[in-house]
Amino acid sequence: MNFATPADMAALPWRRRGFSGYGLVVTVLVHLLILAAVLSWRSRMPPPPSPRILDVSLISPKERPRPPEPPPLAPKPEFQPPSLPAIPEPPPITVVEIPRPAPAAQPVVAPPVAGPGPGPTAAPAAASPASAAVAAPAGSAVGSTRLAEACADAPDRMMVAQVYKLSSRATSVKEMDRRKPVGTLCLAQLDIAPRHMGLGLPGLDFSEWFGLDIRFTIDMPVDAERDFVLLCDDGGILYVDDKEVVNADGLHGVDAVMGTVFLTKGIHHLRVRYYQGPGDGALMLGWKKVGAPTSETRPIPRRLMGRPPAAATATS
Image (cartoon, rainbow, N blue to C red; front, side, top):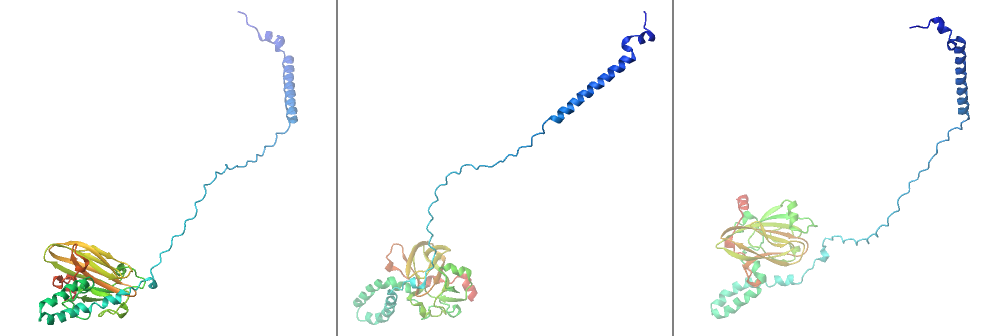
């Protein structure tokens, strides 16, 4: 195998140094011309356009038509507390006081008439129920002329009443819940017939704007159902064994309200809350058999009454 010697390699035409240097020069010149052409082309390019400024405006959607507004409601009338001129002063108040002495006078006249003959006395006795609707709750059993006495001085009076001084804006017996009692008195019956309260009550220093919280017990001899009649001016509420039986609360004139309750044999606790506002007043409590006419209303017998345990302890 024959190998080429270095001398032979040098003698080849493409390995000559002159040919190799000339090619390099041509290559460099070609690159320079390409570079110059590129630079010239770049310099002739137009400048890039400036960025556009877009004006954006928000277009609100088309407003929907609003429904027509309802007509304004008429303002509610403000609550106006009853004023003194609006309280009716019934003329019969003075008329009711006139018949009261009549029942008291009958027992005085009756004994002399009973001697000559029992027949004539039967007629006045039959006429007495006609005034019983007014006179019966008055309670002829009350012996003292004073409607209220100090409990220690009147052990025979079983109704114990706590006295409250009320505001001139009071319109309910519930006004007593926010106040403290100013005294304690005892009554024999709730027999305050309609009267002008400007004269005051015997035994009570107040004539208007006061309250009475009255408690007592009754000892029922047998089971019985009774209609309780509460007549008051102004407000009054009757409770039997802590259950509301009659509600005649509020600022009003003379009004009688009835409630029925079944009483078992034994002790029952009664409570009457009374509120007196301006002007005239009244407080009468009675009962009758269920279904009987109003004229049969009678005071609760005093022999069945007793003082509440708390009051008896406080006055002992």
